[in-house]
Image (cartoon, rainbow, N blue to C red; front, side, top):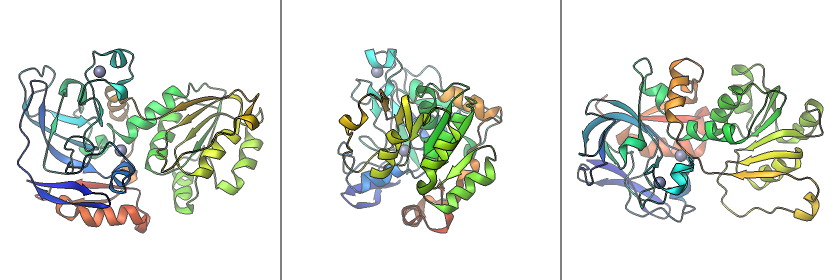
Length: 347
Ligand SMILES: [Zn+2]
Ligand SMILES: [Zn+2]
């Protein structure tokens, strides 16, 4: 089968690989019915994910149908429609027992798919520890509705959860890219008093403004004024930084009120500076990413109840054979692209 592969730094391309087979009892083989391109794929391409292994099939956002299961898989059968989690985890180690599945100590634990082991920008994918790495898609949820469950939606859900949002809070979300938009929907589930979204791109600001009328939208220049005007205690009670630039990182702690929680979800290309003398007495709590993707069942339930809908994020669809074009478009941010769905060629 054709598998879109990380060849070496700066280069992805199609490689002919055998169809994956069950290697251990916990494995499932999933036929990919829809996948997507994530900015983390671009980070791999540009060499900023040191753990990524050249030769690996990329792609860690996908849904599909179970084709085959190992003898140890209890929860899934061939024919099941499933969302694949970006993270594979054992469910038994110290970290998994605490829900910190991103740090699962199993060799295949954490973000392995499409990074250290073959991922889903291909026709089939092998998912290790499938009982934890897969989630059944409810019958009333389409593949398109479920597509982001295991990665960017899991990230937004987790970011909102660990930010400990309560009803009186003003929440500032920095960045309205795909993950920021998923984060926004998940923050809304917590019903804070005010939500402010800061985004540099005018088109994305307009997207937020038109879809979420109760949300304040601002560019970075007016962000400070907006936050100070709306928040009651000299800054946002909760800040979720999803943009990933030096200035957005700085904004995240500058616009937080004293004793706020600042949740840093973004993946940066370089180190960031915390000027601790300047911040002394501000008593901030920082929480940092990556996602513990263990809430997928709840996320799919919320989708099935109509409380989360990420389908408007899908602006383009390409067949797998044209994924190179899809990457160019995604990287250039042209044509108003937000997210791209990649479908099998037969469709
Ligand atoms: Zn991702
Ligand atoms: Zn574990």
